[in-house]
Image (tube, rainbow, N blue to C red; front, side):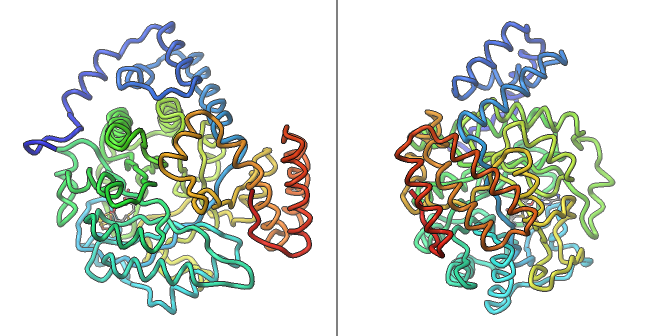
Length: 465
Ligand code: SAM
Ligand code: SF4
């Protein structure tokens, strides 16, 4: 970063959007073909996709988005649950229920005992992956976050345990991130919210007002050796086309500076109403319609073919069902974002940051996915075998993730079916496993997976190839 400038140039983004605002269909088809070769797009190309007007061309884009996802990730979907640990916050982000000026929200930071209860409740549902979420506050500093990660990894219920903890927390220093690296943080996620400098300034007060400290949070993470980082924009704060461009520039800068390693995932939450927070009703200008949302997801898929994409339960079930085939790789289920609410088994809007719209349990979610031919992967082997960062990107970019990951997805899915699934889900799931076994085209590998499946039936757990 030089002279206070950064890699997001608002004028340049608007210029790219303007000069590409009337693309020829032939150019769009060339861009689609490039994405299908799993090549990352350039800003001019993404800007052109964002301006397609013809419905038929959109259908081609949607189809390509699905194909790219299949090529890179296969029919696997990763599931996780968010775990809100503390909602104390020193910042005043206009749109967020946790902002300091909101006196309608009940503040709560979990004690370590309460955290154990939350983790146990999630493990009992069958979860293996969490994203732990924290407001920015001295009560939830890096030391506290590190302790909560340690406690989470140590908590067991029978042979169930959380195997991967991702973190969504405020930007940190390199030293703080090193602390989290040493404890075994999974992906570190920081959303820029809006890439538009002026809008950012208008909406944020407190420590978060520093746009560049936030923009370079994931660069610092990489420097600290946390090599799985995740970006996102909160859609509804500014023009959605601009934000898609911002995400692309962010991904490109990370790739450029860290040896080709871009973000591990991209999130694209849409703004939701929150308790005591009139922003949603007052500022409707940039709210994204369902129709535009579907388009922006497909354009992100084409722009960064090898990056994971997370679609959260902020979206209602109908929208998640529509958007899933456009390239989404991760979904949360059984979600409850009230601090301390999993162990109570109840929803508590006064402790929530915003409102959730897909309330399906993990079991219902998995059954739905299986009924569409998608296998839920609880696999975290990649991280334990060092298949992260550069290594992961290399295999993702050559479209080989699913050769490597499908066997492990099958094995972890089997564990879920045996340990946690309802009889209905087990039935649909076992049928899917049969199909997936047939689809493994390497006979030796199929044999190994079949043998491991038997061992799992006989009580062994955590087997991976
Ligand atoms: N305090 C940390 C931060 O701001 O980075 C932790 C993250 S915050 C608890 C998680 C994310 O929720 C934010 O980055 C923001 O994108 C999203 N969020 C905040 N308010 C929201 C709302 N009203 N609707 C939907 N998402 C919201
Ligand atoms: Fe605090 Fe994060 Fe909410 Fe802003 S978005 S008020 S920083 S919890």
